[in-house]
Image (cartoon, rainbow, N blue to C red):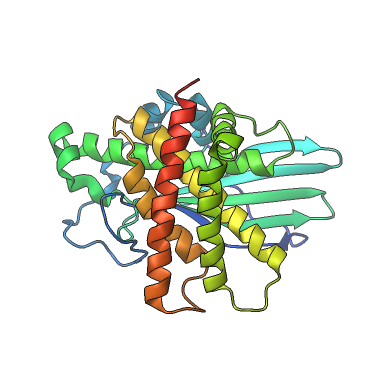
Length: 313
């Protein structure tokens, strides 16, 4: 009999908590405006979420990605942290802990939080922590109901699809964070290829259009004390977020038979990018909304052009 993997124990007092909460969300692309509410979702009858089988969810994911399957191998969906990766580089060891929790929390199907970065100078060790929240509130979606009459099958498929999407974000973070080559999974390399195409010479006009709109939105949301360099870094961070979400939605949509739609993805994530830029601190809400709509158009055109270039290969 296999012994069930236990959660990661709490680290000793030597650890320094360099936490900086940030997240990737997987919103409902059929909704027109972002809803970050944490309230219980309405119109969904109460039932026990334990109806799903963890092993079945993992099997559905394994069919489409061995890398994600390995990532989730030791992780149970109980909200506890499990160590999924440890590598050494020089004198330092780098580890990644992952937790997965299934629960209802508003109208965001999934979210990945990165609340912890623990550093031990004594042990020469850095631990990164990620928490994936999966919200299967869309179980009564007409397309899913017509495809899966059995409620258990439907919930398991939905959890697998959302979890797959959020794990892509974790895999990209692993690749960006861990020492060179340790995070070079197929998913990370595919994402890097899309990012490189998006900044290539053939797409410069589309790239600059998006960056110009992001720059305006960052200025609109800046408190006034940040340097130009900090603002430029924020523009680059939000730009990568937009490409990250395009890749994640595209990959998930293709493997789970829900074709991606650039128009919907651009609209949804343009709003999220605008909120990340800081909102409308320096301008009226109307001026801010106009700029968000312009960003939406620029992002959609960029996404379409990326697809054209990638389809040539």
